[in-house]
Length: 191
Image 1: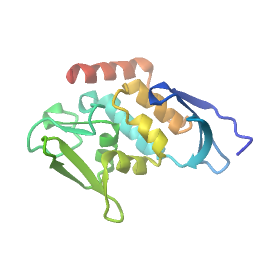
Image 2 (image 1 turned 30 degrees about the horizontal axis):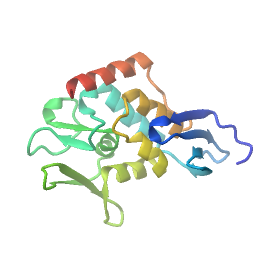
Image 3 (image 1 turned 45 degrees about the vertical axis):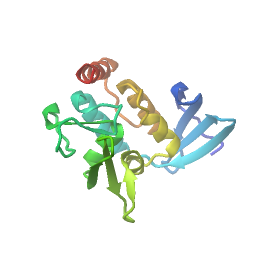
């Protein structure tokens, strides 16, 4: 891995001053170079580019179903999470929630003592995972990327930029104006 040219970069300033660079190695895996936290680290992984693309395309084309501030919101009592372009379905999800809906994995929704929904998924061993952990597995990404990608302050362009880096440049990213308009629609809808 020493001869790899790292072509895609993200300065994750919101994410504790960490810097990422990625490249594709000779086996087709993404190599993540992390700089910061007083150490540098190389890690390889195989992202699910198709799931990244479909999830971000879904959000961009249906921004009223995206609310990055919540794993998943039940806007109307008794509504089960579903993929719907209409906000009348009563649901909105962040990127992780959208990934899991598009994956079609079975889930359980319960409410905590404060009335907030907890959305979990069973993995292949029967263990319950939250939406973030389950989505990270489905996307094939390491924790440090998912931690930054699912951050509640991310705008839609942040998601596209970080996902493009995570996928080693393999995504087809819409024009910036399209992403900005989708971001505006979502923010207007949920403000």
